[in-house]
Length: 139
Ligand code: ZN
Image (cartoon, rainbow, N blue to C red; front, side, top):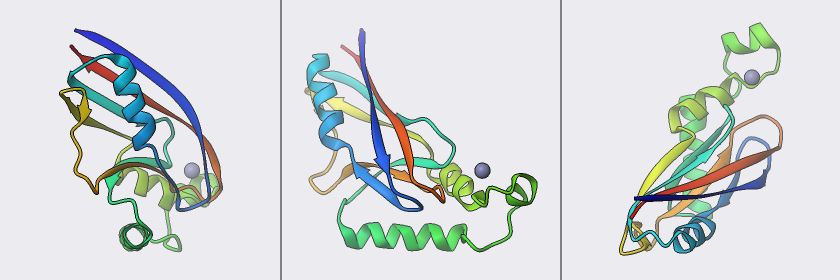
């Protein structure tokens, strides 16, 4: 059993900033030499999210519409009343989508479908520079 990791920074725009990190995660898996295990991708922060998606503009718009439906930006949030930073919706969206996920590594490859990418999101009401990590564990 061994472990290997990388951390890097991403610049994400306000409210729906997103980036496809699949190729970077694939590189980390390859350089780890691990052929059977798990890679966990995480993003530090309480207004971001990590998920898998078909990374194309239509689905990205659909996801944005869905999170807007679940936690509308113009709704009233206890967080906003308490802190005045106006991003209660961002924290709720982040909590619902989560800020890390694990992908199986089999035969040294990410266990993903052809049209399935790993994407990071910024739900905050301002652009953010965020750290992303990928930790590979296995043998
Ligand atoms: Zn806040």
